Length: 239
Length: 272
Image (cartoon, rainbow over all chains, first blue to last red; front, top):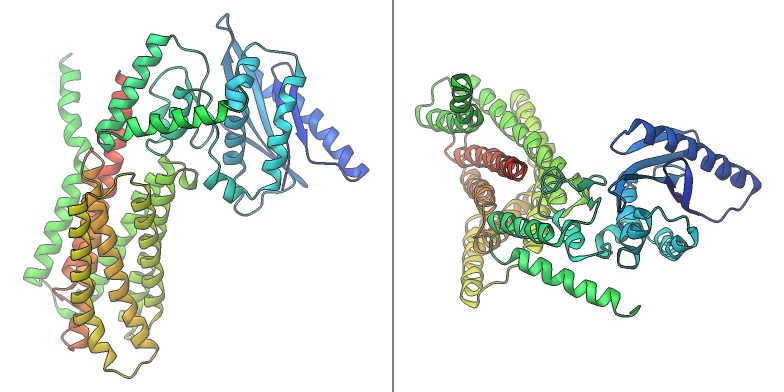
């Protein structure tokens, strides 16, 4: 069962943490020692610049990590460690897959606001608290239903396309489309940086051409139409 | 520079070695069923081994494709994983059939039937998932064609394979035997949807080959059922086994074409 999600900035500063409600003193002690352990572990992992999903299995807990590199306005790397904690790995619960799903949802939250804040290395931790409701809903739901029925909201047209491309291209191919596209896990990819408008247009054109060649005309256009609709419906109530 | 040119000239041949291998397999199977080269006894065991090997080869090919798409995390990954699982079950069926043949313990139904029917269910599920994933509507004329062909195929299969079974005393063997024409009909109908809808784009070719594999398997199976009922089936050099063998070869070819397609695209994206 999933116990929580942590996002840690380089240097070990936690920017977001969500933990399941604590019930006993023992659990509270366990979680606080877990957070401390993750902080130092994340610092070590980030300094080594390791890639891929890392998994640590302990007698009563499993946690999986993923390092995300974003670029700030000065084009400097900003690293974050996303950590998912579970008390055990249940059958049918693929923790790396869950982690990448939560990463996409986190980064795309409020039309990509969190992504922008993370790139600014914002220390205003209250901003991310808005994700608590999502996490509560996520933990209440069955993972199989979530992965089947709830697609992460698109942060932008391009990011929405990248999210959907997983159903059309292998992830190894998606990351070759542009140097700023990085792999989040088994199937999702994320843009580490804003790209200039002209470059973005070229990238979308390239994706359109590749999808057209592989799956025929109209596939890319219907994909973009769907994302536009989702973007307009997800942003309208808040605006 | 000359060395580089030499390497470049060598590459296409190296990259297509598997295509020659598949062509050689198809030629070998044709030669085997036409010329019947060895005695029936060892030939029946050898045939069994070939079927185990062919169905076994489908597993890594589709497993590799499933891995490329993150196994069950994506829709294509789910389709390829289900196909791979179907081939695992068919390979288990071929292996148990071989053991039963060697031991001369063939019964109706047998353990091989359990694996075959379970494999059919997986393949039908995979085709169904793919049909649902194609966001292309039928044109009215194509839809009518599909309905007409589906009814025709169902009627033909029922009259050849199911109707004679109904005259028998209904036992477990009869019920299991009726499962095959039913699944064959469903497979053909789903395969037709894919053929009629998936017409454009490079991905249409490997899908067409895969569908051809399913059509050959279904045709071989219907023919086998009929021959078995008529008492004409022999366990060696039976012409109805030929489409089944070529069907497996088509599956391997289709998987190879999928892998080559995505590999080529990855290389071209990198070059851009």
